Amino acid sequence: MATREQWLAGARPKTLPAAIAPVLVGTSIAEFEGSFRPVVALLAFVVSLGLQVGVNYANDYSDGIRGTDDDRVGPVRLVGQKLASPVQVKRAAIISFLVSAGAGLAMVLISQVWLLIPIGIAAIAAAWFYTGGSKPYGYAGFGELFVFVFFGLVAVAGTSASQTGKVTALGLLGGVACGALATAILVANNLRDIPTDELAGKHTLAVRLGDAKTRELYRLCIVIGFAMPLAMNFLDNGPVSAYIGLFAILSARRPLQILRSGATGMELISVLGDTARLLLLFAGFISVSIWLSPNGF
Image 1 (cartoon, rainbow, N blue to C red):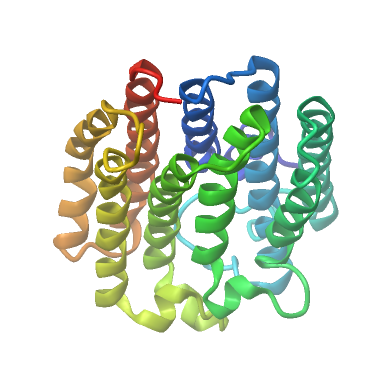
Image 2: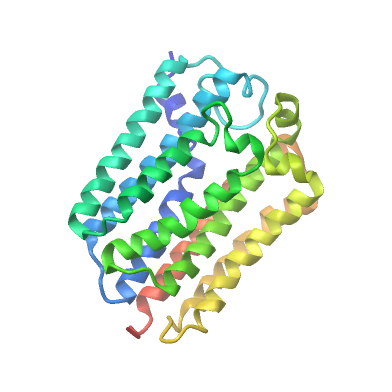
């Protein structure tokens, strides 16, 4: 039976910045646009965290019953390492999704932005079928697209829209920034797993691209993410201080150096954590800069 520490490790806490960062950015945008609603923002955090933990447990369950996790480096695999039964891990995933759905429904009832209901349903379905079902799209190389859309565009623009009642160009640019950096986390993870994923028949985007091009994709994600604060300054009435988010790029030095060195396997584990911290630091810098910018709306 899995211990509390193993269940926590199975939730993959190093990936949680991907859930926290977009809500921070989306909420700062809502405040900049003159409509910060703290209760709705708090519910958005619960929605995002529930979805992230749910997808991590769902992946553990689906990969575990397929045998994909039987020989892996990296974090704890509850099913693959036989620390918990598939039924227990599936139940943990479902509970996480229900928490996310409950918070999302409350958020919609308060905000009256009803479009968030089908978007939320789509997000949970996408989280489950990433590695679940008979034809998981994560096994076909579309996992990065899911992360970019739901932990980038949807999370940031949805968080701001739930408070302001509208989707704006600033929200979309913030979504691209967080989405690109969150995607970099998955790219780093899948780069590490190329050898074992190939053996298991899991054709992730990293497997399809190969080692060298996956490293290039990681660098491209970083470049796109950090280009967005500059793009924000070209918006009419945009946040004039958004460029402050660029200071976070200093923390990208170590993961980029590790990738440049040709590191593989266990040597790449630190890149995942470093990239998650980079995303969180970036979100913190850009959120503060947007929050403190003179309101142009």
